[in-house]
Length: 174
View (tube, helix red, strand yellow):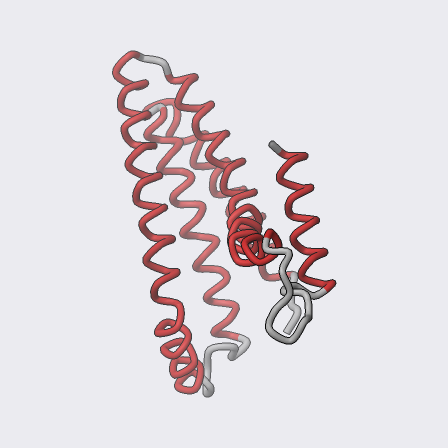
């Protein structure tokens, strides 16, 4: 449906809610006020996107069919979902422990730095995770230079190009 206006308006509204919330809550509540303002901004953004989807009937009459498709996708993706949820749980626990330790020392600049690094991580994590899974799938066969039973190379040219590009990217990025 390619409606880019809704996410842009939702992001702008979230930024405005966050700005107003920070101005109102940070002087009295400090870091907790900033966290609350960010939470309110994310809830407002989500509400705007859901409202727009409902008004444009993206979630209207075809909801049952969509629900059926989501159920089948969930059944297929359950192992991946459990893995990702476990990664998120471990990361959240480590973040909480780090924040509590830094807050107990009064090192709020360390908490801010942690938040920035966490944000950068979440920007690059989807690409890195996909790259990691791709490499884990293709590299063992790429390292095996033998041909298959029919005398063909185990990897085609396209798969070999993906592996080579992934290896170059991992070497370049460290």
